[in-house]
Amino acid sequence: MIKTIICRLGSGALFGAFLMLFLTDSLNIAAQSEYSRASLWEDEIAEFKQRDLENPPKEGSILFIGSSSFRGWRSLKDDFSEYKVINRSFGGSHLSDLIYYFDDLILPYKPCQIIVYEGDNDVASGMTPKEYLQDVVTFSRMVEVFLPESELAFVSIKPSPAREKWIEEYQEANNLVREFCISKPNMKFIDVSQLMIDREGKIKEEYFMSDMLHMKTLGYQLWKKVILPYLSEKGKN
Image (cartoon, rainbow, N blue to C red; front, side, top):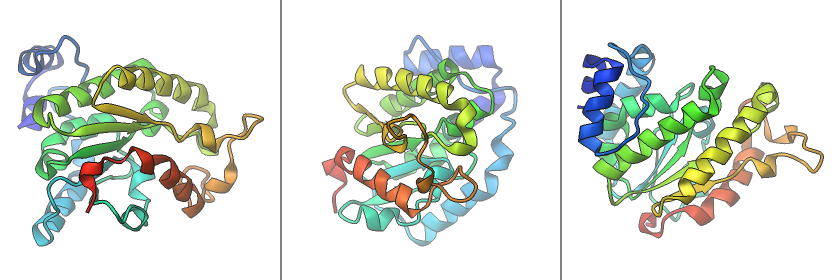
């Protein structure tokens, strides 16, 4: 339903349609007459759907969704074994992709909580921190409308040696998202970024694989410690 609207409406009409639908005064979706990134993820979305048919996930779980930093978390279920968790992340994604595929990747699970990791690729692809914030606002309002009982948390954009040139933009985006989350009672901001930098401001390379972008087990163990206290009690087994 949502992606059909995005495909068929231009950006101006899209804004007006969602303004009425969401009763909101602000919207910024990366949409054109046809969403150009949609075809990148069709196979992965189809794989998720097939997986769900074969092994239907439990409603009321905690949904981890986002880009490769979540997709690569192979030990996610073991790390949060006391909770019902689902991972539907896909590498290279932007938050606008989650918006586009909202009715495929978010709605079916009726999650008690949604944990999002995005922004890494968005900013590195040329999006400004303020533009990324607008996608955060859009996504959060979609959750408010379609999943009003779901809690929502955004994990901060991580610093990585491979993308060190964007570290200031990442930090600005993190600050903007943090301020937005603080203003919302059903939202949380989970800051993993500060613990990945030493006292001299240098990124800790020991958390990263050889590409200096994706994390290894040590990095995920750090994230586990930071994220665990934010998980909803509703998602416990």
